[in-house]
Length: 311
Image (cartoon, rainbow, N blue to C red; front, side, top):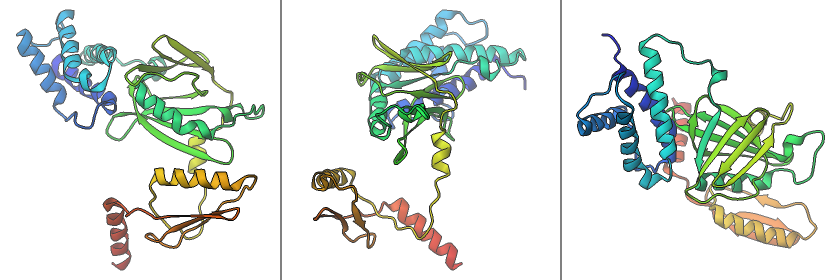
């Protein structure tokens, strides 16, 4: 059966919606036929079927429908809806005519995040970078952001920071336009509002971030340390023991130990079992923290490992 413009357009619209779906609440899902349902609704309201010759106003009506149905609960994403409809339209037009898509290098390296997700990401990373200049390794003061799609096709950003003694990886949803890309940025001077559109893109040798009336840029370092690979290459040896702690309670313990340490640098942590109290000792001060019950998913995985070994 010959591929029609409508079928191709729906296919590309589905993929593009999925790429930004991580920015929507979990209550909004994008099933396999969600794009077709949206297009069907627009066609009924306009009494006109989508074709390669459809007028611009019909696609504008589709953008308005997406905006009305999804923006209320997700923030200001109207520009993303316009962009994905335009990209889907062009991709469908090229596909039915056998025109090759642009090479990766010609596609835009750009992503959009909601302000709340961007701020949460920056807060998780900011204490893991060097505050002092390191001429030999300038990227030690920067965050490494890798914008990509997960196994389901959803847009995500994996972020890394490392000061030589500590390394952190964090993940957040994003709307990814074009091909995956990597950017290094410095700690932002200002924070966006929760519903601001935060645009991150590469411009020549710089990474640019903008939201509202604010824009700042970071020159990309030469031969930067690849923190993703660094994390993969960290070796662990010996027997491991896993426990689960409440992060807020752990923050309270860490604050107490920091005050007690004064000039001390060593904190002694003793783990005895999954459900036994964890001991934190420093400079004559000891704090005890009760672990949390392991989640069901973890217990299920452990049970399967035991069954595998027994079999």
